[in-house]
Amino acid sequence: MLLTVTDLTKTYPGPDGDITVLNGISMSMGAGETLALTGESGSGKSTLLHLVGGLDQPDGGTVEIDGTDIGGLDDAGRAAVRRDSVGVIFQQFNLIPSLTVASNIAFQARLAGREDRAWNDSLANRMGLTAQLTKYPEQLSGGQQQRVAIARTLAAKPKLVLADEPTGNLDEATADNVMSLMLELVAETNAALLMVTHSERLAARMGRRLHLRAGQVA
Image (tube, rainbow, N blue to C red; front, top):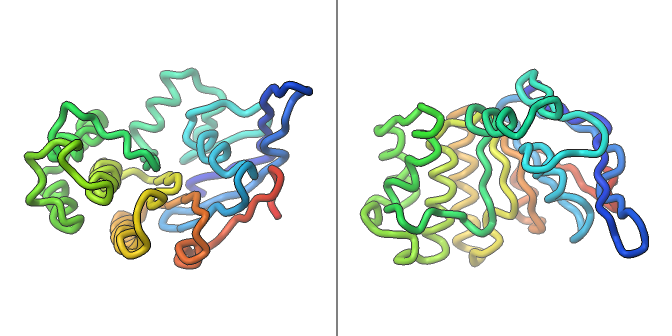
């Protein structure tokens, strides 16, 4: 398995005591699999995604990525796993405003030492960004910025792609188009895709679904 999550728990302090956000979540994914994380707001979807990506630490349980238990790593170790194996697509794009579109796309792959200019050019072309490569993020529409964010993640050819509402800021037609491109590209690289979504329409396009309710698998 590329990803194995076992008995994951997470609590946060609240005004009346600890709030359990995840309560014993277990799941696994192999290379090339696509899995939708669904559930109501507050059900633990984004928390689970952040724990899988090593962006936060669980209170209990384990997360293994490609055979490495990331819970046993320090911040630098988890950052190395993200650099080498994991790509994260955020809803808010998180592009670097001082870099051009071309440099934003290449950024993560350069950090990982895996820049492939031909692959970058292919991604830009298929994402409809070739004419935008010399522009800066502030000069782009929301849909264009999201396509840049997806291209940046896929440029590094991660084994596992984590996407938190990657089309949440887009209209329905643009969201469907971006989703099609993302599924096509992760299939080409045999990456696993774990995606948080509120959209039943988009969730139905994924290979499997994990529905959370009150921090547990429903």
